[in-house]
Image (cartoon, rainbow, N blue to C red; front, side, top):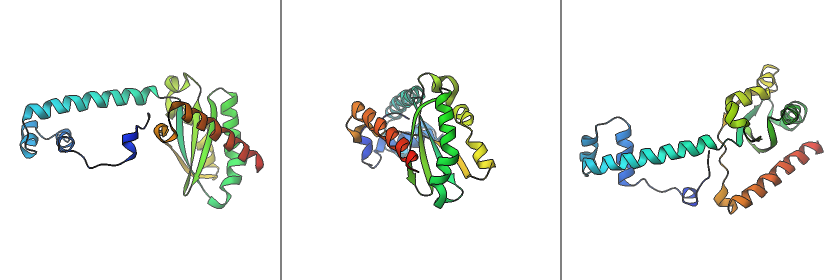
Length: 187
């Protein structure tokens, strides 16, 4: 998880140093990789250290961003997904809110699976983790009962840069939560 920076919105070709670092990470020897990519082993070694530090920082940010979980819902019958959501998934979400596990939710309908985003109560995500939290949600019962073909956790990365920053993303999340809740009431 984490925040997507503006430079990540446009895909670029990997640089020579990136290709060399990637090759070195695949367990090739540094002197061999450096020679293959026309650089000094110390340059590659330094690049690996920077890459490692950046990776550690990214993992730390990912681990500390425990305020959103994502779940893919693969409905058994796509044509009845709205009805299945209202009758079977919505009560689980309401139970989770009442129990204090989540503080809001919203979804997008993208065939073949809906993406359900859950705002985790502060401290809950860090305390129990997504796997245990999603297990507590009870979606496995919907698979056993035949309402869902399957479900699985995903990574939700808010597109903060695309929405104009933190304040805009927070406002968008509030809108998405309200919109999904109201749409469910219309059924």
